[in-house]
Amino acid sequence: MYKNLLLFLFFSSSILFGQNSKFEFHSYGRVGVSSSVYEEKVGSRLNLSHQGALGGRHEENDYIEMTVVANIDEIFSMDEDKPNIRFVLTTQSFSGNNTFIANNTVINFAEMYLEVYDTLFNIPVSLWVGSRYYRDKNIDMADYWTFNNLTGQGFGFQYGNTKIALVSSLVLQDQPGNPYGDELYDDGRQKHVLALQHKIPINENQSLHLLGEYHFTGLDSLKNPAFIIDRVSDYGFVGGVMHRYQKGNFINNSSARYGTRIANGPGDDGWSSRTFINFGNPNLKGQYDGAKGLNLTENFVWDINQKWGLMGYAAYRYAIGASSPVFVGDSRPNEKWDFTIGVRPQIYLSNKIQLILEYHYQMRDYQEYTNGIVGFDPGLGVMNKFTIAPVYVPTGERTLMARPHIRFVYSLAFYNDVVKSNGLSQFYEAGNQGDFGQYIGLKSEWWF
Image (cartoon, helix red, strand yellow):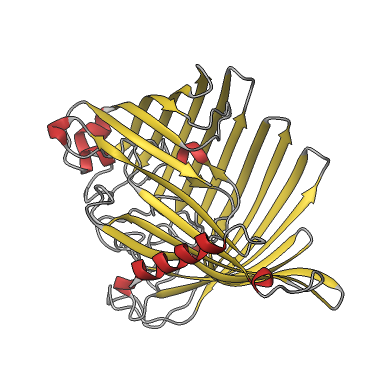
């Protein structure tokens, strides 16, 4: 059913595209073939467990987004002084068994919302209602959305440099044993986030971004553990600041964010920095008194000249669950910290033949109850990863963010004894063995 609907939408957009921009079609995706070399297994990530693409994204699995935008004001030929109205539909497609997308394709609706730019009571505002990617800055080389990733379903409006939104998110499969997940609550754990964001321009090159969030839940009934009281609600707060600098071909974003109680995320959801994916365990009452989390990021992108460019990032995350916690399952720790840095020089050998070189260093303190390990703390896991990727760039652009790419990727990761002895990398979780991890692949990536 979904596939038929998509074909209809894309066919319709292809007919009307370009006619006063009644319809637009956009896409992001990556598809390729890969191997972990060991016993010819399909290529798996080399990063430490629970880190997702943080630590390098070249080993990410196949993934495709397709977006159709219907500009309703153009479709109905509305007057120029009437509101701008658009409907956005985005699908996610990925492999359901974590191999190749052609083997088992899963399709979800990631975005479906209506957005209106209008003037109400002589005040120009932007309104949206639905489900959307409600987020801003991204560390591309780690696929990590920083600072304000509030992706979910809700509504919001913007006036000038101020945004206000109410977003709801039902936490389901993001974390095994999540006490705010569907498996422990009769009706799932519905979280609501009231978010305020404000941009302060400093000068033509700099701006300051402020973030405030209030998280709350209704009364829910716990099914397990039985000794946690029935029908409990909770709340949390987030405060954050981001500094953005852009001059010429240099862009730099630095952010700091602090969350409390149920807003102490990001939890180990494997892909991003969502504050509402909380970390740790509740107390005997099923609440998160004393829980907190800190998220610090730094990211720059610098197109230096026509010979080469450079990008890099650093991310530090600390989180702790409730004071006097009740441990929910053996695989859920109550405290963590991790630190990751990465750098990518990209050399423009010619317009269409370029070379990516990457280095990532990653540390994570693996506490008791992590990865099924019970009775002791494994300790500090460390990864050093090197990547070399010759790239064909058909557009001939000499910029770091030029796409599409066709890359030949080879990555080599070295781990300390803590990681090797306890299998604390996605490479080992996939059944690979050895003192180091390897990945080889031919990958395509595009966005437009």
